[in-house]
Amino acid sequence: MKIFLISISFLLLPLTYVYCQSDIFYTSKGTEIIDLNGKPILLKGINLGNWLVPEGYFIKFKKINSPTRIYNFFNILLGKSEAKKFWDLYYKTYITEEDIKLIAKLGFNSVRVPFHYSLFVNDENELKGIGYSLLDSLIGWCKKENISVLLDMHCAPGGQTGDNIDDSYGYPFLFESEEDKELTINIWVKLAERYANEPIILGYDFLNEPIAHYFNTDKLNPLLEPFFIRLTKEVRKVDKNHLLFIAGAQWNSNFGIFGKPFDTKLVYTFHKYWTAPTQEVIQDYLDFSKKYNVPIHLGESGENSNEWINEFRTTLEKNNIGWCFWPYKKMDSESCVVSITKTKEFDKIIEFANSKIVSYEDIRNNRPDFNVIKKGLYDYLDNLKIDKCRINKDYLKALGL
Image 1 (cartoon, one colour):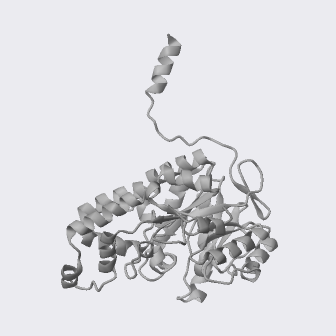
Image 2 (tube, rainbow, N blue to C red):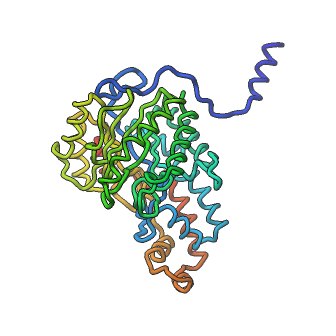
Image 3 (cartoon, rainbow, N blue to C red):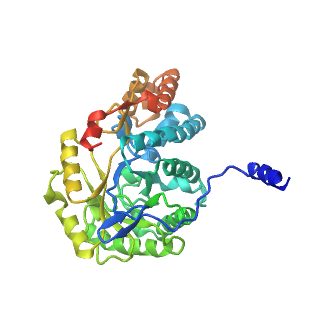
């Protein structure tokens, strides 16, 4: 009878995702990243771009390119309350368990998850938001498929880049605002505390592409490493387990600003777009890795021909550099893993997005019929499903998969 009662009680426990205690995590040894089996691993990853950080070019928008501008545009399309319903569905549809199963089946062993800080705070900057549950679900799916997860703050409070990609006001205000620095730290500490004992987490990519080259880099660059050190100190109070990914300045390209590594579990991450796919392009990073005996990692690359991607990927692998190409899913494109079908109704939305929208008269004159808008947007949500997408086999071949 006791056994029966215990069984019934167990069945009545709430079904929540539980993070198991573990003494085994992804770590580093010299210049190599070590997997959960204690062996060196060559990371072969894909970026889940446009999921938790919408970018206009993913859906053919030319002018409306940052998350805030996209959200405002969708308010124009649908009204604020209907737009909120759309985005709630979007976050739950863009990446699902079926996507992660496909990613694993295709041969990837890692995903990088760009996220917007605003999904992890409310309007009062309390650490509450839908981002936590979205990550919980993703991590659970990835754990089933043995896909490591790299969390990437793509849009930090105040903006760390100063362009559309960080949803900033056109300047990296993060580095000049104590309030924004504190909020950035608080979010990372909250995430690190939440996932401290989760072994499928590869690490934390603190800031994506900090300090664009447009600005006074002599002034801003010296502020980057001290902030990374400060972030590391606070995160290590709650999580001593995970790797920390440190981005170079100027689009993750400049390692010259860094001194000796300030933690025993650092990975220095660089991005490369539209360069020659040759050894010379990565030699400075290899020299840095050798000098300090630390791992390096390609956090983003792609948006090029399959021939270029194949050649650059080969160059990386010859030098034992793990990679994470960009992106996983995009509308009507060959330069991604899966392509989303574009409908004639969505073409009308694209036409409106790319038109002159300065005045209310512009909106009235150019906005498509509301029935067309709704059909275009909700068909888009439906077309996000894997069975509606096209797999780009030549892109995968270029990645050696």
